Length: 267
Image (cartoon, rainbow, N blue to C red):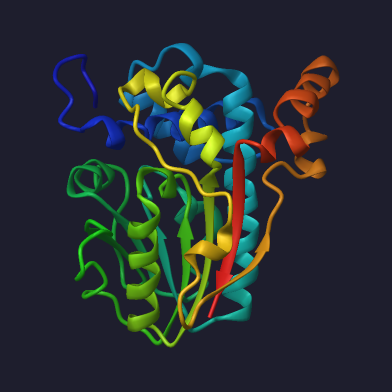
């Protein structure tokens, strides 16, 4: 539990509390995402978020983003029943609880500090493992077995330079025969603006990276497939009245695409 003293996590690691709060918030309201584990962890951790980090609008966005990733992952697991699931930059996310393994080997991957914290709330078993690893290091996949992989990279790409993301892609292709990957990215404009107006500033992060052209990450063996909608109408419709109107105008559609994109890649 965070008790108000010195938290051992660095600024980037602390960003995990922002989506955790968002998912807990919408789950408590009974909209967008059912996530009792997020509610449990948020109540226990009590990290002192402030400012935009605790905005209800951001919470709605975090909930919708998670729901879109969940649906995509379920579909991929049905299509690739023998694939390993790699949740890179898992933070404290409870996707393993919301989606379930369905028999797939599942690896939640994050920095050692995060995994140590995570192990307070999650237990490994035969199909679920937590790996302490830095994805920028060459051997981060060494403990993972399997010929194919479904890769979730939610809320991590903006902390990696484009060349680092490309290196991650290369390692995935070298390690697996088949890869299906979904990743959210800031736009270049959003990355520049984030130095001044971004909820992550509230936990000390000022340097992030953006990507406008998804094909820039293509390497031999893996190609950009499609862009997904991060705020689908079915989820927006769970909001009511003025909240729904404001969210549609300011946080969805073309306005959102100026800031945020969701890209799918496949081998």
